[in-house]
Length: 74
Image (cartoon, rainbow, N blue to C red; front, side):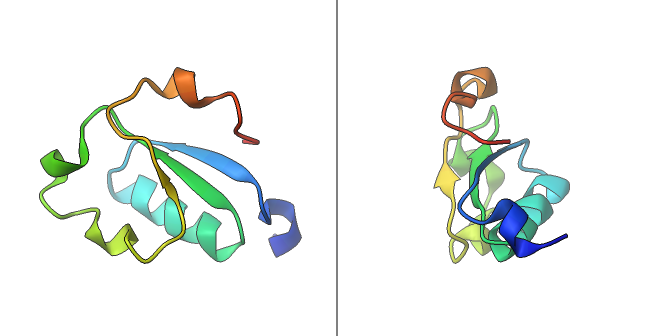
């Protein structure tokens, strides 16, 4: 898929288990801004999200994901 498809798009990623982390990395590599959502706050991940600190993304943990839909492109 072309990088242009995701470039500068805000993409909501719901659930920050392994697949959510992988999706966030892949989207960021394609030029998107992942909006990371999970029902748990970051401190409950015991450092498993630290690898995303270098990824340009927006953290919105411990918020209902449906409240994040406005302003997201996908």
